[in-house]
Amino acid sequence: MNFNSISFAIFLPVVFLIYWLCLRNRTRSQNIFLLVASYLFYAWWDWRFLFLIIITTASTYSTALAAKHGNKRTWTVANIILNLGILATFKYFNFFSENLRHILSAIGMAADWVTLDILLPAGISFYTFQAISYSVDVYRDRIKPTRDYIAFSTFIAFFPQLVAGPIERATNLLPQITSPRHWEYNEAVLGMRQILWGLAKKLAMADLCGQAVDAIFSQPHYYASEFGASTLILGSILFSFQIYGDFSGYSDIATGSARLFGIRLMDNFRHPYFSRNVREFWQRWHISLMQWFREYLYIPLGGNRNGLPRTLLNISIVFLISGLWHGAAWTFVAWGAFWAIFMCIGIIFNSRRYRPDEIASWKDTHRIVIVFLLVSIGFTIFRSQSIDAAIDYFGLIFHSGGLLAVPTGLTPLWSVVLVIGAEWYTRRHPFPLQRMPRSAALRFAIYWLLLGTILWACDTDSTSFIYFRF
Image (cartoon, rainbow, N blue to C red; front, top):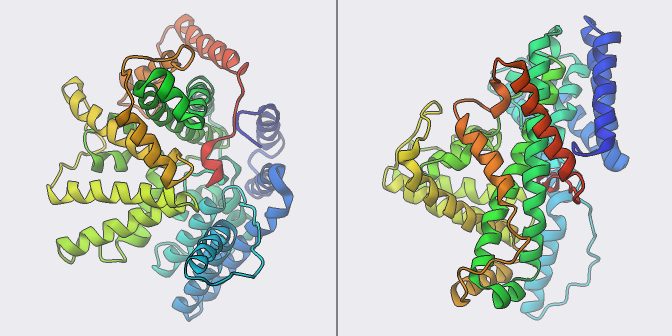
């Protein structure tokens, strides 16, 4: 069930009304209902993959309790291996088997086994990492294992963040699920505003940009020959805006939906396109994933405690695995390597660390532009169908003329200006609608402007969220 679908527009209000009108002040009943609703939400794609969530939930719950009574390391490692094994099978089996077949063919050996065509269950990377973080936190005594199976199942499957995060730590989300939740009007209003803004980013910016991006990336030779390199450059820039509007829009809808049920999810984006260096960008983009890698991979590898060469190696490992986490393709590995190189350069030259409350100003424009150009180069690799396609795309940019020619219909820049301009103006806040004018007339004007924009954008072909693939 997509957040930008009619089915979700019906599903969310129904769940909300039953949750507060029929089950108010009944925490366990609310959790049971949220769990059922979450399983229904996930089964909307393919009910057969529900068993994977149930296996992950049951194994993580039971091994955490078993670890409490002894052999903590054994139980924790066993659960991690099980869940990573499930993830590897469903996400990477086809990738590794295909590459092994090519390697064997290259050395003259025939691969005569049957290669399975395994489907990728939606959100498997997200809920698997969330389950692993719980196991490790129990092992480290950062949280006590819960005996409430319903609450724990809801923690794993909570529908707003089930398919594309944020990847929540049990220390934040689980106590909210086990504790009584009370109706707060202001929090619900804030949630609706965040949902509205997320839909605007998805429909009015991401989907409109996506139409141009799909056209350009599907026929780069045609656009290069007819309009020149400027169109390919435009395609890279528009994809950067598309993926930001798509993913951060999802996160806004997820966080806003959770607020409706009295639950606060972490911020997954903090205006990453206003970053002044690469290190700051990765402190503001997909925050929950980067914190996960820092806590459960980078620090266990040694972090920055063993000298510069080891620090650079650890950074490289993190970004290479982060690239592979995004998908089973060499383009994602290359994308991870691209960022590993620039992160290492930043560390070598001791690029500045910015605090979250240090907000960019107009004086930082040149730094912001440089970082955004690097982001666009990286996302060109990310978007390409293969390494050869990415090389070909960059080659066309450097060898095509017509730098000022842009085809009509491929410049949905008004939507980019609307979204990015609003976020720049309100960049001290998580999202623009968090602080609204006191004037009721002005507030309603803003609401109707966004609703009208969303309804207008709905006339175009709306697509699923990009990160549902990961």
